[in-house]
Length: 369
Image (tube, rainbow, N blue to C red; front, side, top):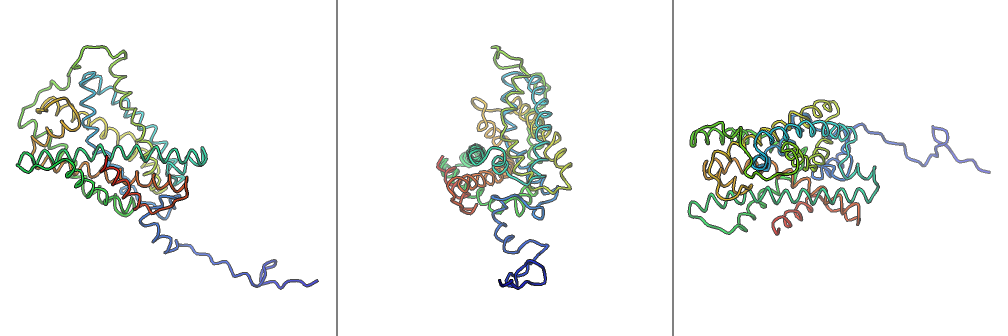
């Protein structure tokens, strides 16, 4: 019986190459995932970003005009005081829930789809990715239509009338490419640049309305438009309306996984915690309540009518505010929708296409809708 020759280590044949160990990421792997942003994989710790970058990415949602208008809409249904109480309770609830969600996502580095696979298997993972991707795509349409309506109203007032389909194409054509490079390479920088414009617009709209129409405390004690009973206390109605946007927690998860582990507590308590929702929900709602009670809005209150009223009041500055705000939120929406469509098809039919491909698919569907 012949005994095989062994290398310097007992039990290892000579023809087996030595194990090569590196302590840095493979450049080829990094190059491949630069555009993919580890959308199909757990985010490694070497790919994480600092707390400022994480905050800038997440504050994109803060500027959604939806939060300005929904506060005013709820106030018309149950009155200002009840609305503010209900929104205040939702601030606390979202802060506690998403503090936990962000910590788990940060520690695991998983997306919603990947975590769902660990908990509920392949079917659960596919369902989560499909649900998340389609829901966010709906928000892309809704938030993009606000910009299209603002552009249409602004230029129509100046004699340049174009079909809404043209403005919708303009919006999709400039917003979709902004989500190409992902969280770690672009979205944090984009949102950081546009954040001052959002803040100036939010504050400026209030100041502008006061200068033009004067100030009254009546908005603080606004009563419901209708005396009909909702069957529940007004504050509870407001709380339930705001707690209906559970997709926010899924968004928290998919962004929190990019945060560094040493920043987990700060991100959980501040970036994704209660302070964030004070501004996003409470401050935006208060601004919406004040503006609707102060400025002239034609027809029933909606996101479109409210934004047209703001653009009519502020002119080009109102248009710039709307564009800056909606660009911030929709760049993130395009990103999340494309990554979840990519996950869905990769997990179900094994069709693994680059994320930029799915970004294009989302853009086409959004325009056609």
